[in-house]
Amino acid sequence: MLRVALPNKGQLAQPAAALLNEAGYLASTNARALVVTDLANDVEFFFLRPKDVAVYVGAGTIDLGITGRDMLLDSGAPAEEIMQLGFAPSTFRVAVPTGTIKSHAELTGKRIATSYRGLLRSWLETHSIDAQIVGLDGAVENAVALGVADAVADVVATGATLRAAGLEVIGDPILQSEAILIRPASSEKTQAQDTFERRLHSVNVARSYVLVDYDIPNERLVQACEITPGIESPTVSSLQDPEWSAVRSMVLSADVHRIMDELFALGAKGILVTNIHACRL
Image 1 (cartoon, helix red, strand yellow):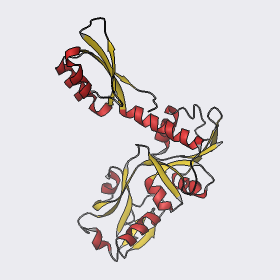
Image 2 (cartoon, one colour; image 1 turned 90 degrees about the vertical axis):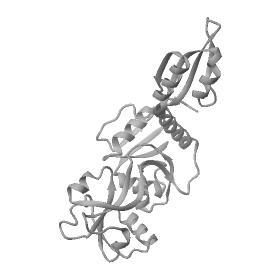
Image 3 (cartoon, helix red, strand yellow; image 1 turned 30 degrees about the vertical axis):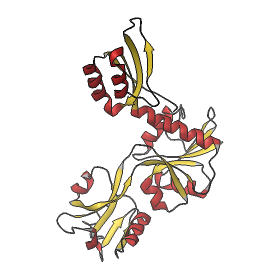
Image 4 (cartoon, helix red, strand yellow; image 1 turned 180 degrees about the vertical axis):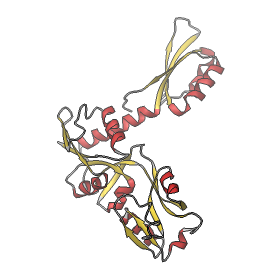
């Protein structure tokens, strides 16, 4: 049975559960359950603290896990990223009291509070910055105001919490993070792991694309297919009117309105857009 670790709380938990549900897993579950067995798919799901997921996966006791890239790197666990999942984007950044420190180079000799000790330590060593790490569990925004640090290093989504604490980010992000799928670094991929990975990939593709159907005069069919080339090529069907054809194609959802405008200008009629719930490519 495939063993998969999932985050049990935080910004990763709900989107991860939704992704799995769309992929055909976790049809029903108790929100407080620690372990859920999906007999239909021969998968056992373990709900863990997001920061612990990489540790269990790296130890080889869990086959796959969903966590954040920042948490994987902070853990130092022997696990590897195998897929970006497209949700929970964030950055790991240094923040200081507004109007004080201007660059990362000025952090030398300073105290930096963080709950991501491993990630910060690696970055400081890479950039030859000799600063003291003040390890805290949980929120670090008040560390400067309470006098235990001169700066903080934390995961930032919007930055609103930092600004409310009188802090501003400086320099480029230390890390761009998002939800990822991980596995033990030393393991060989099994068929069950491959199936799980393919299902998640298919959901992300389905979320990114829509189906476009339209009718087009044959004399403009070539131009229309250039606008909607599809994955391999569009599906073209004859209509009862021999001078027209029907076209179906997958297009990126982000581009769909521009594509509809271009098709309409070309003379297409009956332009329809349909969401894709699942696919295999």
